[in-house]
Image 1 (cartoon, rainbow, N blue to C red):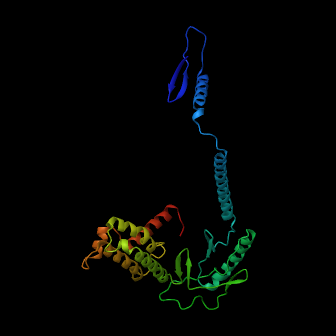
Image 2: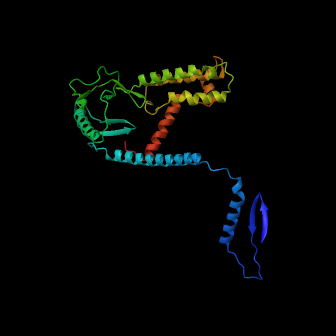
Image 3: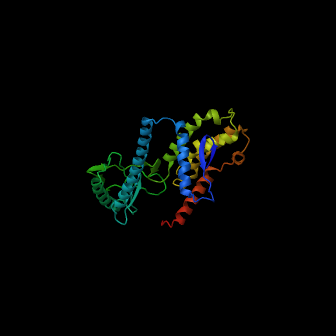
Length: 305
């Protein structure tokens, strides 16, 4: 038997003696080595801290419980969405987080409202089964009509009102849904006015870093603009892509001001040159590109229009 010391641990190296009948298999060698390492290194291990071990075990148990809760929630949400009642073939339902939208296409509001009312009553009974409370005050109805000129009325005269839990659902000319301001005529003027105001607020807050006197490089200025301002201007842009060009031009003006301030360019330099130097597409081209990408995704997934 030969003793070899390495790194403060004693390892026994067993050699086979051809003259005797002594033989050791691999399993016994491994057990001997493990016992030797444990014996030699036991004095270097820190003393057991029962409180620390208890905390570690509690953290592990908490992680297991959270994982099991997440799995249960995912199963419940799948069951929730699959159990939602199938409405009539005409009325469609859209779910996003805690928002539920019903929409129906028809010739007149008088033909649409009875079908929507039946769908609302059927959905309300299902909400009661699942013990889901509906805030009737935040519920709203809006009728879309595509015509030239702003429609003077919110709903056609003589249209029956919609109700949920005996509470009336008011008809509105504009409604904010998923942070998009929808209007009756699909002009999106109110939406673009709101996001333009928000972008101006962010741009004023970042003026010290994006302005003419800023010491940041053009690359960093461009990155800040793309992350903080252009994302506000182009949020859900495929929805309002068909808006009037003069309305979209208001968003382009903000980008032109950024390009001129970031580069400290002279008044005679064209905006197209600044866009080319900063490698920024115009708002119109960017929106058209997003619409094309969205259409391609829908075609690839065999979406029926």
